[in-house]
Image (cartoon, rainbow, N blue to C red; front, side, top):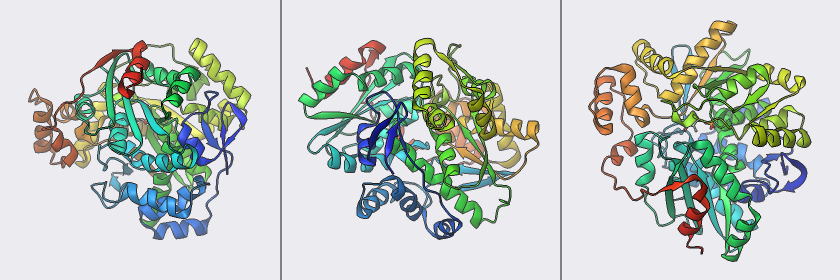
Length: 494
Ligand SMILES: *Cc1c(COP(=O)(O)O)cnc(C)c1O
């Protein structure tokens, strides 16, 4: 297996190169040129393994130039002792839903599953491909990636990490998590703009040849911790394979496969579920759930992607995204690996903010996916309803998924086994979640955490408790077109 660029298939690199670079020089994203197919026997073996064993089993296929020892070192390092649960991705059964809780890591969001591993993958890759160079990780975040990346890369030798987040686009808890990050190699900036501005800015810096040269001169090279990096996606495939094994062990009814519901922003998480399906996990429909920024719902239904629309700041801020960067990888799949067609669509998107897919792609897309959305009121209503009915507290992002799943069942009558990706701890969005279950308000973020705990009895994760006493280290706000200057200043480059 090699990795190719979605915009030029003749660009062929190894896993280490794909991970170390993060993005192809032509602006395309790296994808495997073939996928392993897991057989019934593979699943029989996988079922017997713990999470670390399953992760090694799946990841060895994708890390084609890593030794077995290296894969073992990376996976063990990432998943030993860093999650509050022996199982990093446990399933809770709530009514007819299997809720895959992906938020038991150090930053209480699903990004930890990938970002605890990525630093290991990246430093191992850099040793193979860029001996002696320091890796500079640039991150644009809608809230959760930033903190998870900071935590993963904190004081990792030979790396620096620089995070940009939208100053008014993250929850108070997310902001405090990032602004209080410890470590000698971490840099955090708020920008005046939204997530798409941050992501566009970072992509621009990445692909600027002059900037690359300047870093070269200083013995550094960029990489990405965003889900444009293949090293972010591969670990996410693991938890869908693992969840399938767990459903098998629970004797869930899987004769017609199962549906997966994913609260979606940048399309990384749901794409990983698609790749798991491609590898043989019997997933039926991929249900793509959006908040009021419903660009993907419209796209799945009409085949027209149009980001020229009002941008909403919602109670599920990690999904406040109008340019879903991983969709490019999906388009590559749907078009039958047509790099020219993908380049054309991406080019139109950056020039006009919109593109239309062929009828063939549209048909394939509606077979695989179902798109739905809900607004803030419906999101909070769903949190209240799920808590009232089952005593289960879910966060705002997970609630979007639950709401859309209910719409799906109602409209299609398809009630087969369902796996819902739960992407964050409710305490990460305590203000909004409290509003959904009570009319009390303490007036402060941590007061609301306590209230929420009193009212619901749901356990407060340790990292959230620790945050209350954390010291703020970063408070710089930068202009969205001054991001490069911020990068140079963080790195001490003149
Ligand atoms: C990042 C994030 C999402 C969106 O995931 P994508 O992979 O970008 O689609 C959803 N929920 C939470 C809590 C997140 O942090």
